[in-house]
Image (cartoon, rainbow over all chains, first blue to last red; front, side):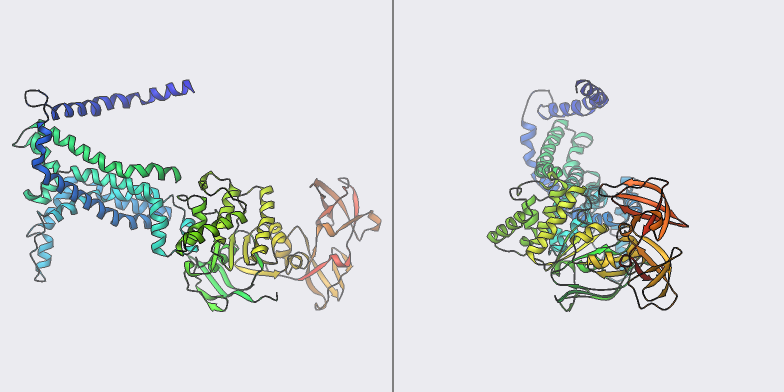
Length: 273
Length: 348
């Protein structure tokens, strides 16, 4: 037991060094700035001052939640179908799903700009039928679309990973006992996919709530998110890294709070699968 | 056989990707019988069960349940329940909730769900296991949960797909007796799939022997064992000596270079036939008294009996005897008229 344990600790040491240098230390610095003013004195003014940005925080949560919900609804059936394919076809489809992720994130988002613009491809196409032009870009809908488009694979992959482990005979057993398609979904498929659902939600919600590129490119000036605000404090005109750090800390708190709802029952579920 | 037909399959054809699995299978299953579909792997027995359960839709043919055509009826609307090969218990539910699953779907009052679930758990000997996680149970216990879960809906027919395959020999024997007891106490039809001929003979009222997607023989265990229809059945059900022979006239057959009296009649004169002699039906006698003589090539102790391989002219015979002969010994073999089974030559 003891020599084994010693070895295990040694194996983790490169990661521990990495973590201290690049995760724990920066986190401490962010916390320090969040609770001090420009002169380095302790203050809560940065945190209390965030009340002025309530709408931005609320918008971020709502848009990220909407994107996460849409991803879940889109990804669930796709992941299930994927998990029921033959192994060779599964690998093929998995690759096709991953393919867009190999392209640069910025490039993909730029592509949506030119699609959604007032004289973009979609509006020009609609124009052929005398419809529009519709106001597509610089709306909160466009921001959600950007989030869904970019983060959908992060919902599909964890769902698929859990669903391939669900034996088809368990689904047949439910049908056999009198469950129609809807009941199979609610009584068996969703409960058994729960670990994948919570992982997928985390992996989509966290990058969505903290994004600033998507909202800037597709949301215009009127759809500022927390990410944009934070960026403004560090790189923009307002240049106030104490406020920026405070925003980051609050964002982190929001994310942790949201995640605590989902992870609580994940552990319970994973013990069963 | 006096019972009415509960399931009737008519000319069922099933293909998987163009591979024929069932080739026009017809079968009547009588109410309250223990019916076993027996055959080697790939013979179509599981597919037949899945057609009955509604999990495989036949390419052509019809399935009747109590006189009604249910060919296109989905599984959840059929009055049958299944015990799956790998149990297929719900991993997110405990033992009690697994059993109660079917009753909850019917939205029965909680009191009735409780009473019926506990009754079933008692029937399969798992009283007191309600709160257990299914993953913490042994294979035999998981199997019992699967049986209780399938029976709680009071199906008229229970389908069992090689349910004992994963259990060790001793447990399997116990469960065979257990299953037969459950079937008799509930007085419902069991359709049981297995590749184990001994299991089939032990439990069944009727055995259906299948090969290559077609039925080879239907009959009681005794019929199947004593009067096999063809060489495949004879070979699959227990060990057999199968030889080519010629039917000289009624009650007289020639094989292995000798004439033998037999009890079969109705073959055409000089018809080429196949002769089946069970290894335990050959008596070992001194060489001069034997109808055939041969040299013992090896002797294997099998517990209850010895299995001997005996070379006689060009033929190797298998003999089961409680007395061991010596390897290399010349022995005589005697076969009574009752022990010789004559079959028309099968093309297979």
